[in-house]
Image (cartoon, rainbow, N blue to C red; front, side, top):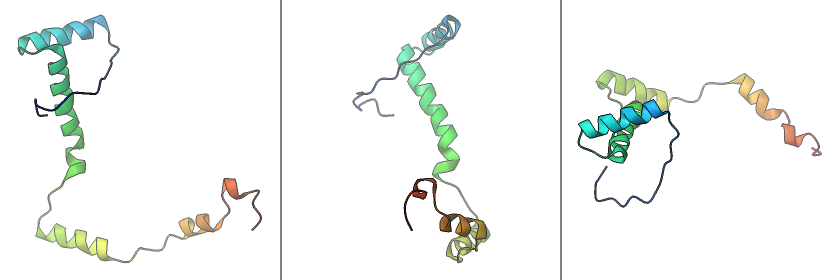
Length: 96
């Protein structure tokens, strides 16, 4: 996160006294404020959690398989087709 970005949003946390003390101690050991420490730590964890959802690498053979799957016609899904043909919950009182 850029330190020049304007911080206009707020996030409140409820935590135990022990958790707060641990964060304060870790922040002090890192020469950061608790806010900076928590924000940097949370953003690093968010990047880890989202890394495999943002991009993925494929070798040439995997890329060809991936493209073939995207280009292939959809396979028939009879149960889904049947579901779409049935009236929905909110359609029950609507004349057909």
